[in-house]
Image (tube, rainbow, N blue to C red; front, top):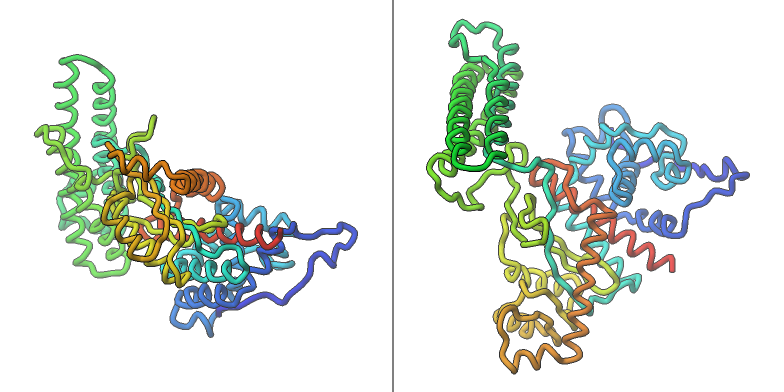
Length: 462
């Protein structure tokens, strides 16, 4: 049964000699989280866990506790285990999270509840927070700056050999589970469940050793090791297909779960085999958009930003809109590596919808510039458009960009770099620890919400 909250209890009154109290920012944050809109949105998602969750079963962890512990987790960049431990150890955090003297929920319990919150709910909560910031006069939406960054997925550096080894390892592990489920293997070939992980690992190490060598003799050794590794991967893939067919014939819950795992990974392994054959054996250049760089996070994109020391990143492009006052008003997790200029119309439309008026100043970097974007911003009513033009510039364009208002707007836009750095350091948006598309949306969404809540709390505390 879904509970709303525990019976209120002031822990500070129980230990008056300690003179305990929340710091001003945390106290303001405590007030902000009393908002019923936030509470009801999260409760609606948690209520969908089971058909009768709101009215039946054992009393659950209260919605209020789940909401506040998730905010604390992303506010301080803690793991689930650290959140459980430090909330349990702190009377201040117990009072803030409204746990009081009750048992703090386990990290696994918090994970199960957290995965129920939908990405659309987080976007709606962000819009609500922006409206709340307007009421509190934290921002008026007069300035808007745009920029993108990369949130890495939690994967190892991808190479063809390591991806093939991952495929063999995962399929072999699943075949071992299938053997336990099937038990009677009379209908399958003798080697249908054979584990070939060691053979694949041996060839992967030979490829790495050959890659460290230089000169022509290393190339035949690498080619030979790749051919043997591809043969192993293809053999394991064929095993998985046969065992998967046998599992589906059983039609039990256990066999269906294992069959679903095979159905999920076999096509991914086939993609890795195909791209390795094209690139290594055929010498063909495989486009980045067609490459698979992880079996476990297949939504990962290859992003080339040209940064010194990190020319290529593996993750998802995150687009951010920020207004004066340090408030992030919109975020978007993009597919692949699209042009930055394509995002400006979406940002302007969202700004007008939330603030009911266009920004007085719109600023972006060179990647956002295009004649169409400048015309679009002017048509939307933006008075000052600060989009530096890349490449060669005419004398008229140079004079335009040397105006005082343009240079000041460009300087203000540069602060977005510091904002992104703060989001990555404080709220851990450098690397996503959740899985899948929805996991990426949740990780980013909670980080942005925690940032905005902190900004609003700091402004009101002042």
